[in-house]
Image (cartoon, rainbow, N blue to C red):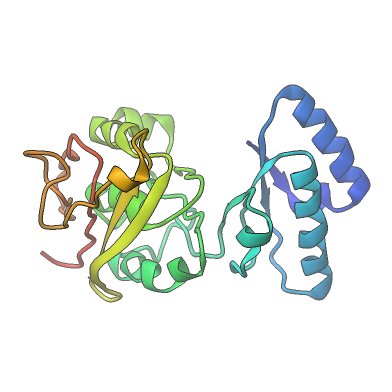
Length: 236
């Protein structure tokens, strides 16, 4: 996936030239950024640009974009869009902010939040950062950390390796916008969907595996199975 300023894809001619070139390279997606406008002409650009990316069979991440307005129904190749104060910002990312997101921005569609930006003087615990990968839905997750950040956190590497790439269903378990959120995603597996069952948030995902990870000032390793519930709490 290549990252573009929207002005480099402003016209149909620019898009045709770029998309012809990068699809020839084998690129399968584009991250388009810095739209930052609700003007009519910008909305018209969205319609034209998304039609062109669909024609070239390119997946899309609309970063620096408007709020979700059902665009994913018309253009299912749009995997996510930002429209949220994500972790590229150094401040304002306390638990009170991130715990509210599933009840506010999260209701409007997938959010490109860029979780796990460990280098950003993070006020939250590492456990809270890992929890965001489940609590916030996004068709493609683009972590904001550096390679060295993950090398220094083996638990983060284990967590990312076990996360499902596709969710069959996500259930709300409990939560409050001021304090915490808990959701239970069910990953798609090779088994028939009718055979899948959603674990209770009180039960383990697998025998002996914890069903939730709670925030803590200490680094805690994630469960060895796919997480079935995630909590973010302002205080324990």
